[in-house]
Every structure is written in structure tokens, then in C-alpha cells.
Length: 353
View (tube, rainbow, N blue to C red):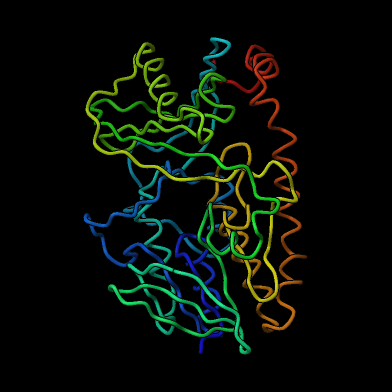
């Protein structure tokens, strides 16, 4: 009988396990191999691997420091913004840590106390309510295993199985498909590139240098010729001088974009949601690591007083995240409306000449 079962060992789930593992009996489940560098691991997080200033601040608040072996070249101090719709381009100063995302996730896992039971390479299958709480099912080494728990925490990202089970798709954030391809590159560019083009997406696309590679990614609406639009993006950027010849791999994932505060959902009964599963992700940039760390820290604080009433305390604490999502949505038109973006970029305000 566990006190808490956490599904998902990304930044949200692993940080929560780290913070509560000394007080509660915890089981952590993830489909990836989170303790070993395994080239045969079929599950990779589709992520640009940039640690934003907000995420850096949360790392500092948690009393952690990024080891240098997590970082990759080059470190990035500028964003090249390309507006293909209006045929404009600007360079803006920004500060990101460029890192290996898989190593970052495993690094966070390394802080989890030894008394936390960790089941990696395991697939969460579902749960049923029982008098003591819940009985969960997961598949490990080909066998289906059950465990009992008082609390379930969904840290299982976009298209969260746990969220879909308990919310019946009510107030779900808008869902996009992120496609990202890796290409060999002998002369990586020294900045992160953000691309806006209404023909491709009403969100945005990106190019990120990472050691001897460049990553081309796009957030696209599902069922709207996603692959075709990705290829159009590639063609347009090739005409601007980008080289996408030597492809190494393709990654894909669903991502949430909460356009309303009501789409942030903490859970019900004794089932809580954290990170992207809750809808905690930037609606303007799709940055999620800072929100994952914040929401998991708030849930850990809510559990300090015990399990009874924890969800109400958690809902009160995440008002700060909801306010942040509201403010990000208020600033989004300046980024994503073609006319307003044109005015902002033509002004040259805060750009590097």
C-alpha cells in the first residue's frame, strides 16, 4: 500500500518524488529508462532542450545547480526572430542554457531518495477506485502488476491518461503536434531561431543548434496536413540558407497550449495533476520546465500538512501559475497576430542592431 503513486518521471514527477520521498511511501512510474543512458530506448522526449530564465530561477529556488556535463554547445544569448508572413527579421537578446534534455531528466531523477520505489521501462495502464483509495495497474517486463495507493499524481504530460480519465475532456487545453528533426551541421549558428508563418501554424517553429547538429521543430495543429506543412517550412528555410540535408532522426509529441485559465486543472478527489498534465505550460512559447518545477513544488508544500485536504491547499497555491498563464495569453497577440507582430518588429524595440 503506497501513500502516493506518481505517473511520469519528467521534471514535474521527479521533482515531486524528490521533495516528498522522505515523508511518504512513494511509487514512481515512467515508460523511459531514467537511470541509464540507453541508446535502444524508444521513448525520447521531443524537446528543444533550452532552459529558460524562469526555469533557471526555479532551479535556484530548489537549491540546485546545473552541472556542466548537461550543457551542450553553443550557449545561447540571442533569439533570431524570422517573420515569414511579413518578411521581417530581428535579433533579440535572451539568455538560455542549451542542454541535453535526456541527461537533464536523469539528473533530476538522481536526487530522488532511495526509499522511493522506481519502476522504469514500465507502462501505466489505468486505475480503479477502492475503499482505501485506488488500485493502479502498470506493465513491467511484460507482466501486468497492481498496487494500492491513497493518492495518484498525474505527471504524464500532454494527452495525460490520468487527466482524460478524471475530467472527461472537459476544459482541455488546445492540443498541437510538435515535430522535430535533427540534422548534422558542421557550422552551428550561435542563436536560437523562432519562426512565425501563418501558412504553417498559428503557433511557431524553431531552429536550435546543439553541438554538431541543428534541430528543426514546429508546433502544428493536428489533422491539418501537419507533415505537409512541416515540409513547406523546411523548403522556405532552405531558401533562406538553412541546410537540412543530413537527417539523423525525427521526434514527435503532443503539446498543450492553454488559452484559458480554466484549462488549468488540478484534479479531483485524491488525484492531482502537475506539469503539462495540469495544463501548466506557457501558451506563448510552450516552455514547460519552469511550470513543471513550480507545480510540483506547490503540490509538495500542500502535502506537508498531510494528505487530508491537500488538493484544496494545492489549488490555492497554483493561483500564481494561473495568473502567469493569463498574462502570457494577454501578451500573445503581439507575437502571433501578423499585423501586431509586424508593428512590434518594425519598431525595432529591444532588438540588437
